[in-house]
Image 1 (cartoon, rainbow, N blue to C red):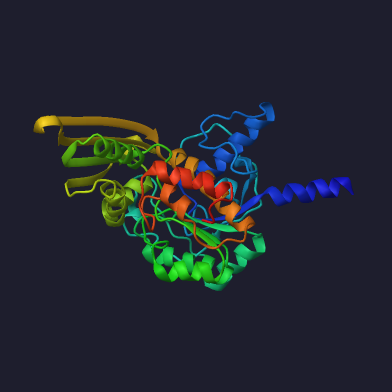
Image 2: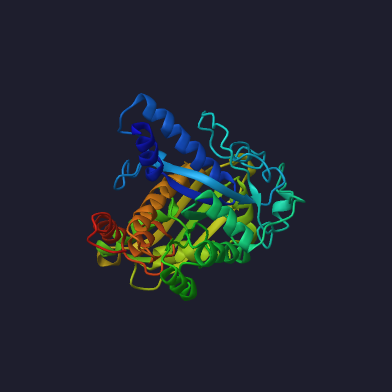
Length: 375
């Protein structure tokens, strides 16, 4: 009886999630969780590289992937532990063995998720599986049968129809939480906001700030410039890498330009010239480099220029934020709270329904965890 109670308690602490898009980000999330699981076998706490080791009672290792969807021939019908290491995935190698999961990757609809340019991705073209694809009700059944509480959208930028499909599956049919990690405006859409409230499921998005990426640094600089009275006239941010995400961005990155640009310009109360750019360099694989430059004036209209460079493994930088977002969403589920999680969106999303400075949204997050704020 004691053993049964311990098992039940352990199962209750798990946060069960489904994933759409078994690419580099899924690889980093699943491999990373396994890395921390091995770390905790030897160390009690103080794990490196986490924004939050605990959020409420939850650790990173409480996250469990229980369902997955893709259309790639190299991933569909394979165990998730094998699919995340398909040849088209270039994520950082954690040097960790991911055990068999028993989770078989299901084929969802192709829709606009695999544009022609990804079918010619240099060296590792994406070949769509010839397996029969699942419809909305079947996808929802997979999620519900697996016990998934949250669906994580890791689809390629520009996959608007696919993003809408899975948002409908999660929010309206399966009635589970939905995280939109791509720059399509789902959480900012009033219809989905109302549906999430009606069905009492939490939603977070749109797009995701990396653990320490170009957007985070650019926003911090924008806030600092404004606080210091420095007037910006021109600014650009250029990013380049060699993964499928960047190959996709150079072909259809309009929505990404929008979310990155508005994330920064929303913090500066006047108009100025700003450009964002993406370049695909195969030799970089999953390593991303960001260059930030701006031209401004300070006291007496004296000229000022600034330039910075950041180099980081792209997918772990994303996964480091996902493990926090999932745990915040679990708190909402525990408290029976649905709708847009404002504090989580404002701090972790590039394009939340409402933009505010990060230091304010961080305080809101702390209030949310303590139960002083509903969302």
